[in-house]
Image (cartoon, rainbow, N blue to C red):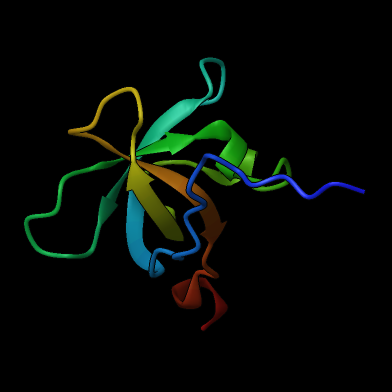
Amino acid sequence: MKHFKTRFAVDTTVAPEEFGQVTFYDAARKFGFVRPDAPQAADVFIRHDAVDAVSLPLLVPGTRVAFRARENPRKPSQMETTALRILPNLARAA
């Protein structure tokens, strides 16, 4: 059995988890934006494939989320989500 070397570098770094709030999500067009909690941070593009199917209907403006982001390969000036999870609304539980 031969071993082949890959010509492509594998990115093993994991982006830190950030927190923010959904500002827009269009379920029909399968995209949206999150405003990070970090001061003066630009909105992050929500990729529909970064969200599990159960959470998609819950993506409405104001929803608190945790996400990981990376540079968008098609638009280097824009960040996009690679993973997104909805945070529980603690105000509702009280």
